Length: 342
Image (cartoon, rainbow, N blue to C red; front, side):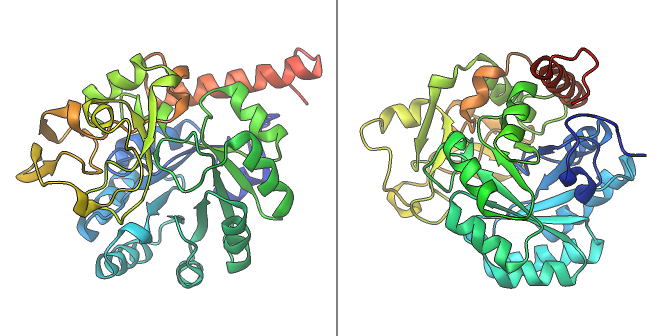
């Protein structure tokens, strides 16, 4: 039976979750343990399988299914992936019959059509109104509207407060807000702006089940919102001029007067860490993971401005439950009723 909650929306019915809280498919970070924990608590999770091997994708899908029978999806970024690898990733997802596929960056109608033909729900993360309209027109089931305050790769320049209502007013399909949302009150604010839920990365990065290294988790917990930097100096492994939001570190400090306008060929290949025999370079888009060793300070410490709302590393299920309780209490307060029913 569907959960009776004042924050439940039509997006929950579409996704098969209890609450409109989605775990972002953070590359390297959103692995099976984290996805399963979020899903078990009533949210919806995306495996972050950007540029991962088909074998790893299959293993991670199977690992989630070993923990839960609830639906979840896989996040891919065609823009930053070699076409041959992307094809192999897609086939792995389709053969496994994943519930949904989430795409990001430029809108690819051909990929939307293929995913729908394979029986997947299609989510599309966008950073501007034109792309939101294009995704809907191409057949996406849900659009994720990313504001510039979001962490990781950012494909837009407008804050959520201004962009989200423009997108929700223009589209007839469900829209989720992304960027700056890390609390129950923030979820209610997104609903007030017309969204049917939120898509969260930073607050789930700092959880027990996250595949981020403890170094990265501590940095997120200790950081204030004014400590994030928007730049493209973490450029190796990605196309030119692909900006990201991270916490400041020695790399961003060195380029504080030259933060934008860079590409992967502008930087030396200087190994500062290692992952299972693979060198990890300064200026790369790799963030510190459990599987790495080396100088984590110089790696990309992805985080959105919502880091100021994250004050401890907690179990992901507790994060979901706290957010739901706060959101329901906020609705009750706004409606002047103690029982939480809108």
